[in-house]
Image 1 (cartoon, rainbow, N blue to C red):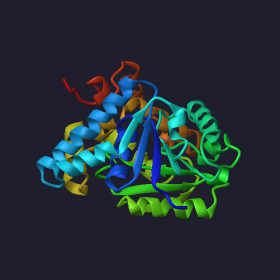
Image 2 (cartoon, rainbow, N blue to C red):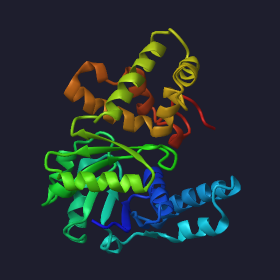
Image 3 (cartoon, rainbow, N blue to C red):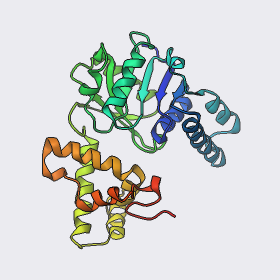
Image 4 (cartoon, helix red, strand yellow):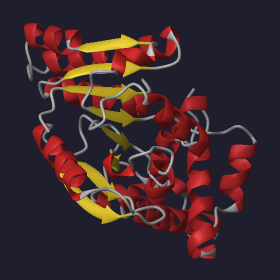
Length: 282
């Protein structure tokens, strides 16, 4: 399949970031979200990123303008009708995602690929909502998409090898490395990350070290760009709780979210998006 136009469902941090990467790689991009407010926030994120790249002399002003011009922001679903690949980056809710796939299936070409950016929901389950799950696949990006090199490709039960190969080739064209895994709760990266992070929480809750020193150990001993408490705040503690619960259902208590994590979410401390999480940001 010759891919020239990519659609993105969702203009949030991940959707706008993927749109930026795709546009910088020479693709025409259409981003769809529910309201102009969401679209304006996504547009501003990409614009700010372009300005930083120009300031660092990574690109010039003309290139930045072309990248922005090649991204169309819309609230209208039919605008996505001509895309060859649709990447969904909406909240981690099975019903919302499946409803969107069913709507998009009526709009897209029969051979268009639908990909989900989910970090943990079963690709086989999500793909069961459409009539041809052979063209459904997981493309799990990492935050921030413009900087992180990996995309995790996830095969559902019915995902065809042609779809897998197309997704791998698309990622390569966008300058990304890929790994391929079969559909399993948490895939590879989320399963490993949550196991490591929950152990960080246990070390903290047992009073062995402060969260600041645990984060410092992650950065300086393991070369992580952020500590696990910092990264959790960046990603959203409410999302983390739901992922941990899903992993617990399959793999047992080793993935059970801690009481302290649950209480932070109950208190509305969701991380950076609420200005309070493991750390305060005001």
